[in-house]
Length: 452
Image (cartoon, rainbow, N blue to C red; front, side, top):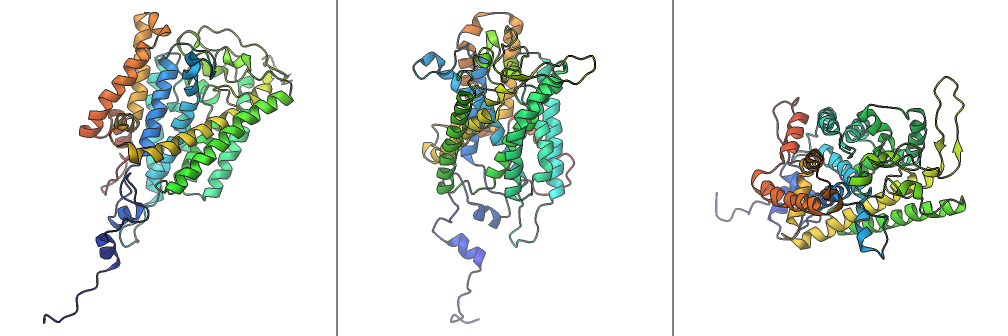
């Protein structure tokens, strides 16, 4: 070969790798989807998603372990902690839906000829759901006022399996239907199954996290996860959409109650739902959540039967069981954990806005928010740990922690101090590792991808 031989023209993959310019999808969060596919792997973690998940789990810690507080009022700083009631759990569920998309979306090799097997993804999600349900059972058996969200997660994950690769418009349509009819199904279910004693059945069907409605939240996350979340324009659109949904949900609920002549503050709900944790039950997923809406059932720990809040329909089903009235007025409530369409839509809007802001600020905050992102990466472990702390504090029998912030601050700070080095040096959290290995226990040998 002579020195005059023409220089070899680089192929498309080589030239893309040598390009000094940033690829279109690349951001400070990590390599772009294009970069990852060239390497035959999935895109790296979204730090903004970890940040949002960290805010969600710490918000639930505050709602459960924090002192009792009145309903949110801008003029009363002692009520500001109420902002996390209910909304933290919705953000948690939204992030779970996004993670489902990131874990199960198709992956192609460099030549684009080997897509992932859908059957494998469905099996992994199913086993993951079983693992979450099994993990939720002992946490529920601790019999704390905290209503554990994991069984509802498990049911929602199983229900989502047929839609993992469905068209986005189909996913959006099913999500909207679940958010519209889910509260009605829950209201009727509370009337028919008001005496259900099994805590898992009660939690999934009647409690603060009724499966039908929360399935809609997870499906919204499934659809959002399909968006190019590394694109700044998409993040801004998510922020605008979240603000719009929050205004439409909360504002629409207030207007609907005014049109029906119902009290705007919905005192029948705030007595047990917005009263915080401890004395009257946790505001975010505790037994107080069982009284989502004025359903006539018993409220949180220490709370009596809820007063009537509007017109009722008494079913004439016959038989020997006397059914309580169905609280149709509760379907317009905007109080945390009311479970109505306006309340869930409003909380979902807040969750979308928080997610968008988390994605926007992560690239500029560096190590400042690293502890929050670490907590988000170990969210399942932190969630389970705070329920164990609640159980220990109840077993000790000391009442002063119910009225102060000591326990909350210790758990929040401790979570950040433990999660940060754990995430850096050990990677996946202990419970996350158990669930991940369980979901892959039926897989054969093959490449592994980084979890989301």
